[in-house]
Length: 279
Image (cartoon, rainbow, N blue to C red):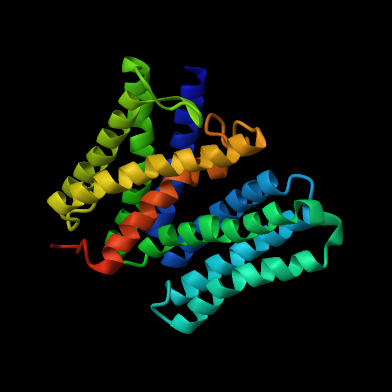
């Protein structure tokens, strides 16, 4: 329960700050907030993949920031689509070319080049969707969409924690995350769906309920898979948490692993017209 207390205390401090930035400040403040979280998560990511390579860690974090900035500037191709394409196309060749100038890293070059390509796409690309949700619709709608993306992941995490603790049962994927159970997965999905209901009837009434619940089920499930994906990365290098910045939560990468999958799903649904505000 001490871990739960730490989580609640961290949330109690962070929530008013996040809400204040979303609802009281212009979108650029949200871009900066998400960008700060992205940088910290990227630093942790490359700490896992380049634990003994300071240059590689700095280079990877910088590349992630560059892609994040381009995606916000172009809004994923909505403005200056060619720049978006070039940014994505350059990630792999730049990582490969940098390796040529580092012969001392040849023995680990294959894995480190792979991480240098994955990191910007995973952390920078997906985190950009959180910031871009803020620019959708009106000021209130954009802020509400960001809150909804966070709720899909974090309410799912909370539902999974309590239901899993209460009912236990068969393991979901013991090889990757030995504490997760199928009952917890169902509780997590219920938490995500509850987030949709709360959003529709309170702070985001223009978000449609029925298609929203369908999207919530998909986003909630993908959020859980995002959590498991990050667990694979951590387990492959033998660590429990990506960092220790947030008491009770681990690192920033641990906190955004489900959020970025949920936010990307929500942003894609809005961009593709599968969900329409005010529908």
